[in-house]
Amino acid sequence: MEEQEKVSRSALLSMRHEDEGQPILRLPEWVKRTVLNTEENRDMRVVLKEQSLNTICESGRCPNKGECWSRGTATFMLMGALCTRTCRFCAVNKGTPEPLSEDEPARIAEAARKLGLRHVVLTSVNRDDLPDQGANHFARTITSLKEAIPGVAVEVLTPDFQGRRDALEIVLAAKPVVYNHNIETVPRLYKRVRPGSKYDRSLNILAMAHEIDRDIPTKSGLMLGVGETLDEVKEVMRDMRAHNVEFLTLGQYLRPTRDQLPVKRYVEPAEFDELGAYGWEIGFKMVHSGPLVRSSYHAEEKADELVGR
Image (cartoon, rainbow, N blue to C red):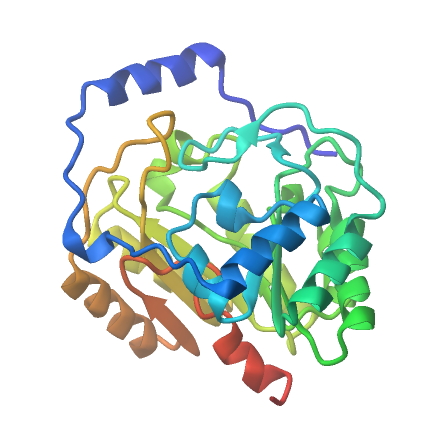
């Protein structure tokens, strides 16, 4: 297994020290979100607790949690609540993960069945500690969901699997309706925002997915407001298209807690509109661009076409 790139503790502390001197920006109206406390949301919390499951909706403090749960969509986070990497934008806890829970695929399938979910997104923490990077666990969960819920659409949002084609082949053999891996930010900011990850490796895993199974659309996303320029964003969008990425999401980075990167800038809605129009212009088949857009935001819309609903 390729050795994971590491950022020294002193380097991370230095970055955090630099961040402390940055003023905290006031939250603009266009990124404020009303909390939805619907019956569907309450049911979701009960079932998640019963099955001892994690969702990125909660672990990642997603602002769209209430809306997605109300629409019958949820993003389950596989393989525990501790990640082996130290991405500085993410609220998921970092550390040494526990061994895999072998019954987790069955528990996720049962939870989705109870909740009547028609579109399920599976993501995970990074598991650089596992020989297969967790690929078989993804595949088993997809299979369990399809057995439990005929006609369910399962989308996956995976780590980069250290760039391993064999791991990617295992996941795609289980036939998710969409394969997603997020680029997250522009290459200039990778060491600061995504230590342990590589821009070219992320692009290549998306290109590999397209090569392995062209019937499964590839998807990727960027978060804006961490120091990038709009020209850099457009360059990344062109790189994505050059690597056959078909679906695109663009959203505003929102700092989950004071432990993560501060927001450098709140991008105006008009700029998201401009980038979204550019995405359609250069050939993406689906574009969601807006301040509150996230990887799984309205994920079921295109998937309905793919499974013939």
